[in-house]
Length: 190
Image 1 (tube, helix red, strand yellow):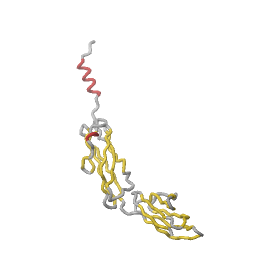
Image 2 (cartoon, one colour):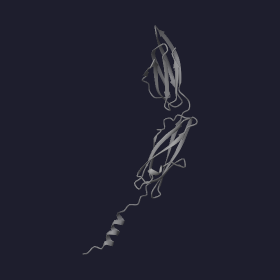
Image 3 (cartoon, helix red, strand yellow):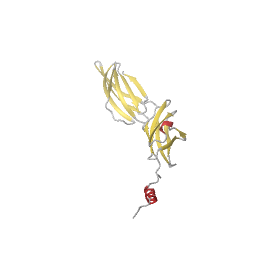
Image 4 (cartoon, helix red, strand yellow):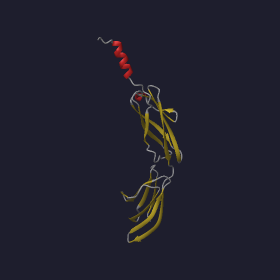
C-alpha cells in the first residue's frame, strides 16, 4: 500500500492544537503591601503566552516595550504615581499573538502617612534610659531601629500595624520607625 503525501498533511493538521488560552500576567513589584506616595515608583511585571505576547496594558495604557513584543515571556515596566493614601486597584491586561486576552486585577495599598512613635514611659538608671512605648501605622510597621551615634541596632519586633517596644539606650539615642511603604519617623531620647 502506498501512502499519499496529502494524507500525511491531513494527519499533521489534525494534531495541531489551537491556542485558546489567554496570556498569564503578573506584577512583580510592588508586592501590594505598601507604596510610598508622592514619588514616581517604577512597577515591574511580566506576561507569558506560548504563542507570544502581543501587547500589555495597565489601566488601559500600553506598557510593553517594542523589544518585548512577540516574546513568550515578556517583561514590562511602568511608572506608578501614588498621590494619596488609600486602596487602589490596577487592571493589568495582556493579549497574545492569536488575539486571546487575559486580565488581572491587582489591589495596592498606598500609604502617605509615616508611622507614629508613642513613648509611654521613660525610666532613668545612671546614664541609661529604659524606654517603653509603641509604634503605630495605618498599614504596617516594617522595622524599629535604635540609632546610637553612627550605629543602628534593630529591635526584634513583629510586622504589624501596632507594635510594642522596650529599649535600653543612652541619652541622645534616636528611635527610628519605618513602615511597609518606606515612610519613616524618628524621636530622640529623652
